Length: 75
Image (tube, rainbow, N blue to C red; front, side, top):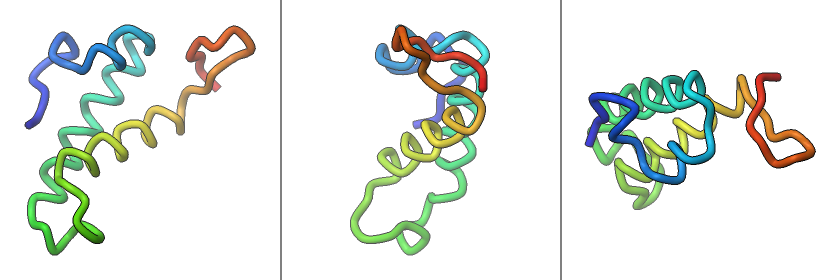
């Protein structure tokens, strides 16, 4: 289900990503949730939730990367 605020994001996201990256994650997740509503729009038997999380992580990785200390930093 879509997230109304970054406070609702999964613990793994909130505990690891900076605030701006969390905002990117939330917006990308919500957009994918709407875009992949119909199962015919998804490949295989991937769930709507699973594809939304994949899209969200991909969006974050377009802007952020992990540094040598395993922290997420802007590219």
